[in-house]
Image 1 (cartoon, rainbow, N blue to C red):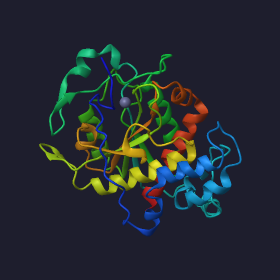
Image 2: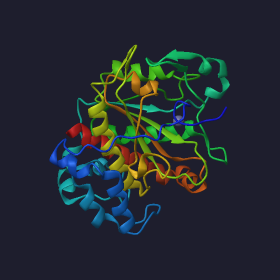
Image 3: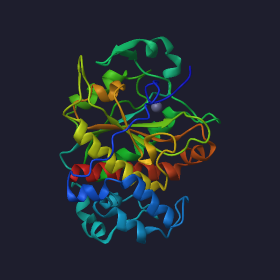
Length: 315
Ligand code: ZN
């Protein structure tokens, strides 16, 4: 079964331009994915845990880097002076906030073909319950990747005091189905939900993109209330992900913004709480695969996502 996109449909390479009028602080961060990456590139390009990029990167991090104080001790993560000063208060600062992490796919989905191929109603149409996901050419599965990043992200967010729930933790034979994944976030009254993925695109296609819910009103789907806050969440995550990992926004979707809007994903269409997907890289590209298979890089990926969520939740 060919794979394209988090729920197997072809990603739509359309996007909405970043909205620049939310707040002054957000306006400064809106082109964050690209700016974060450019700032990083200026400072010397990608490296695995290399030091020496805190100075300039901090200038582009400001309001969003306090999550770096989560206490994981990772070197090379830029932290602005103001963030450092507020770091001791960071633990517990998200007390009362609920974050649902949705690790895409499931490590044993492949054993339950009939079950995951059964369809569910996502409002706009019916689609498969779930998919197996992709893998690197050497066999590292997307499902293993998403769970690993989810665990790292959970640790970081819990360190900030947030209540964190996973939609699955390899604790069920398959799924959940995409509609249930959405319902888990809704039932938890999550303040933010992020669905973790890695793409299965062609070699040469590189970089990350964050998928935002488009405006959908069909059947049980009504995203009107979450489009705005989800865009804010996704924009912050994209900026921090680019800055912390040094990865560039996708060179094949999103026109270099790292942001893609879709109306065909059940996990987004059925959400009633702010939610985005992130495709952290392309597992089928050898250079991206080298990153995705690195534990050190996955820690950075989790850190970048965490910082974006923390910024969003602190408003
Ligand atoms: Zn996926």
